[in-house]
View: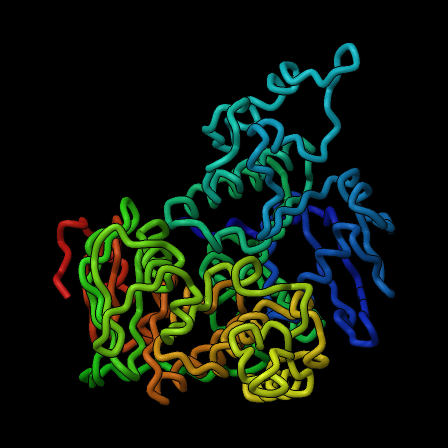
Length: 514
């Protein structure tokens, strides 16, 4: 990939100057400043809770700052509402994409936009004529009048970008755009971003993936603890400088020593697992105290394999044994009773009840431990709060109390809540699907330390990750999947980034028997 273009000399399209914001007495922003010029790809990075989301909400008109000023084209501007933000030329594409599967592609593109009418009816033919060239420019291949159900995350991103261009956006804010995209889909998105930049559209690119930030961005602003602590460009813009600014000092490197792998007894044995077309003849053993990685490209079948282990999907063929006994869960509840835990890929939709408290979420798999007594099925609020407070302390979860709704926590702290739930129930096998997706570098290190600690206590841990750098740091062994098959097993010093990437693109026929 080519590097970022030179820093633009144009005056800013939008600037935030000394912006502050408090929620319930806690300061989310402590005087941040940021400016974005037309045609610039500007990176915004920082730890979870650093204030990135709060500033984006202010720019989007979802909340108002307590103090400071916003300038648009050099003029002081009160945004005040999403409608006003749209009128000013700003469009926002969040991780949770604005998308309705039951509508057509064209209807999804036009969500929230004024529509041409004829004789009092929406003139979809005229709208399609206007949208078609924009959709082609972005790379939307699905027919505009076809239903959007079944489209991939990458295609949904293209629909959202098309919507922004139909709106004639001058600034597009992208929040973690590649979190669920494959390598080839990322390359396509990067090409679109460069095309937008060349045409004068500004992009605010928010991501924890520093390689993408370095590749795409002209300038990068770093937030820490509600403050803007650095603006880097040119020769200053390097990975070490970014990491140091994000964490506020030198980073502790926790690279794993890859000697000979010592294996404990087999806890989970899998033979010939199959659910077509996503999982084909998967076989492996997972040992007590081991951290086993599952690598591969998006769509390789990793999450589908986890669902089979956890009883969320049923097998077409194959057998499993847990501690030497036949294991065939037909539901997740059966898997939990047998001693398996799962931290799902989509923590917000599959792992948490966001409107409920931290205590409620932690207790979901530990109800027997918080009953008032062994006879009556009543929950003890005191026991539940005590359990949650212990997990909050043990995992250093940043929260006001165990009664705080989990939806108000940062991504890293939400992930700790999901992991903490299983710490209390002590499963024999813990499956973590993308455990550090969407979390900052500091939270990533904390989660890695926690995973190592669980393995050291004797828990068998299975980690699924799309990050080639994560598994070499963390795992004793790694299995690489492609086209639904396990195509390579790597162990000890052979668990490397290059080996994982090479094996991920290997032909499925190269499968190495477990």
